[in-house]
Every structure is written in C-alpha cells, then in structure tokens.
Amino acid sequence: KAGVTQTPRYLIKTRGQQVTLSCSPISGHRSVSWYQQTPGQGLQFLFEYFSETQRNKGNFPGRFSGRQFSNSRSEMNVSTLELGDSALYLCASREEGQTSDTQYFGPGTRLTVL
Amino acid sequence: AQSVTQLGSHVSVSEGALVLLRCNYSSSVPPYLFWYVQYPNQGLQLLLKYTSAATLVKGINDFEAEFKKSETSFHLTKPSAHMSDAAEYFCAVSPSGTYKYIFGTGTRLKVLA
Image (spheres, rainbow over the protein chains, first blue to last red):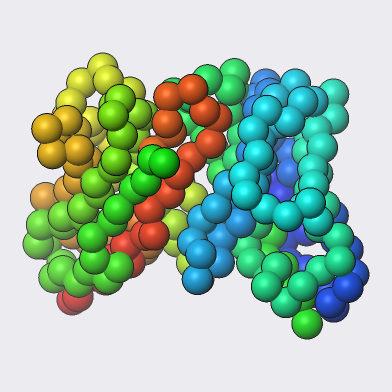
C-alpha cells in the first residue's frame, strides 16, 4: 500500500495570507490526525478526524481548521498567517481510529511564513 | 494531564556501542506507548509500540523497549549502534480514551565512528 502523502512538501507564504495543506491517508484508513512540529514547541497535536467528523482538538487558535472528505482525504487550513506558524506540519493516518492503533505519518509540509 | 519526558536531548554513542534512550510517562493508567524515529526532512517512522500484550517489545532494526509500570518507563535500547541510526527519536503516549499522541521533546542520537 502507498503511504501517507502530503502536498505540497514546501510552502512559502507571507504574514496575513492563508494556506491549505492536503493529506491523503493510507488506503482504507479512516482516521487522520494533524500535528505541528517546531524546534521550540516540539510535536503538538492539532486535531483528528474520523469519518468526516472532528473527534479531538488540540490547543490551537481558531485560525487553524481542518476537514475530512468522504474518501478520508483531509485538508488543514491556516488563516491570517503569523511568523510563528512556520513549522513542519505532519499528517498521520490510522485504520480504525482506536487509541491502540498505530499512526502512520506522512513526510510533512514545511511551511515558512515571511 | 499526561506527559512524556525524554531525558537527554542529545545522546552520543560510538558505533557498535549500546544505545539507551530514556522515556518516562505520567499516567495513572498504563497508556499505549510508541517510539518513532525521524530522519532529517522526513516524517516519523514507527520503531515499536506497547499495547499491554508483552512488557518487552521488539521493533525494527534491532530496537527494543521494555515497559516498566513500577518505574513508569519505556526506555529504548539497541545492542549495537550503527551509523545509520543517527536520527531524532520520539517517545509518544496515547492516553486511554483519546485519539491523539502526546510526544516527548525528542532525543537526537549521534553515532561516532
């Protein structure tokens, strides 16, 4: 099976713009989670979607939003970008969304905000 | 709130030496525990996971970890380090009843020739 894919891999934006990142999970996986990775804060959970419903959310401002489509693909949107949003955004999928299930991570999208 | 502590943000070992990366978690109920590795400019790759089936867990590339409830630890070991093991390693916990991972701050492993 193909792994988790994320597009684009690299992105450069300026402050105030918005951005949409895309994630395609492993075929058959219904749960998609998003994480932000920065040198200062490490890996932080953004949100998780299962069967098109947001099931869990981390402590991020409302500028960060997401959605999941019927084919389990997910998008993450960040509006009104700030310099601090520069990070590696990782998407992970798992089969049934059980807490014991392994999450499989994509290569990430590196977002740079100028 | 549950947390994960990785002692040592940087660890250096000689090639062929034992690798020991430490991870402690805080939880009143044993959670599910994972070790991931991240190579530069890549995502996270699962090394192994603990889901209560066995306390000694074997993973890929000769890594293993032992779950010790009394010490709330899940340290990662490898008998003999290889140059290709140089990477950043993350311990993660999946608390019961949630659908997210809580990650440690990571340990960057350097392997010396």
